[in-house]
Image 1: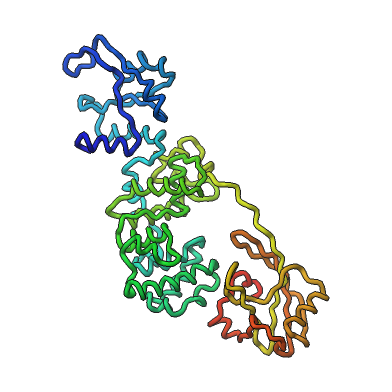
Image 2: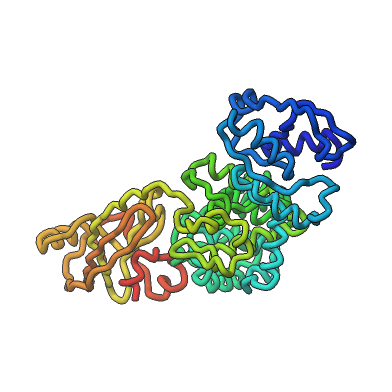
Length: 449
């Protein structure tokens, strides 16, 4: 800021109050050593009406007079910082900036300029990923949806296969579910299809270069919209995911619960504030890389390799693993399942799940809740119209969803005839159809083998 108004706006925006130690005095020119007949300022009104976190003194003389006249009255100690006066020739602007970063601690803000520091690190340490080689809007969109709650290494092979079959939005609007098989969270795939149709119908097949329009697409939230906008179009929008939340909670020593909307909003504001406008996409990707390789979620982060080590408040006090602060997780619900791999004349019987709820609308191996006795197994076969069959155990399996665990006992059933009961949710498919056309959820991969 240069003008008085710009300086006022800067101070208000950053919650900084500026006031004098001395109300009036006799002084010759601007010589501090000539100060006589001091009348100190009364700071009580400010301290009573504003939530002042810390008092800093701009230079040694300010600090001297604060200690002499105000400290006993306020009961609050001040921190001495080097004078910002041009007369303080001993301090360069760089040295002053380093010293004055101290005020970022009580303000709980990230120091400006750290975006460029991170970009310098990213230029030498960026991961080589298939979707980064050609960051078109379509490539960025698909990769970001795939990466939601899924490891990068798991996504790579899916991404490559996907782009071979569905290279653009038009192809995506026609077919996709089989290609998603095994990635989990199948609503992501359904939303992709709906969003692809939106792009075709509302935006003439072109993914919009507009943050608000990106948000209008099915399944695209603030993070994904920010990622597409910044990486594909160079629009300066933050992309705040779990990595960004974790990193900034440590930098700021943020003690609010990370999943609270207010904390997420504050973090987004901080990311936006330090986001380099020239390279927003690289900055957002650098945050992802920093969070996956250095400022990791589980275990001790590798702070000695972090470009932001010197400004991280959690690291300064040795409290890296105390952040982010999370609410205690609810214990997962355990559900026991009896699962059936039923084969008839080299075809496998599948069951369609309800259109709402877990794994909605997907085909699965037939299953029922609970552990079944021999009598209950026989009764279940009758319900499905399977009369002549051989049955043997296939072992136990477990699959973990975000909120529930399936503990499964599987039975292999070799039936002589197709079911004679009219069960609309059952179909039978060949092994070839199962391999090429039908998407079977990862929950059943143990028995798929």
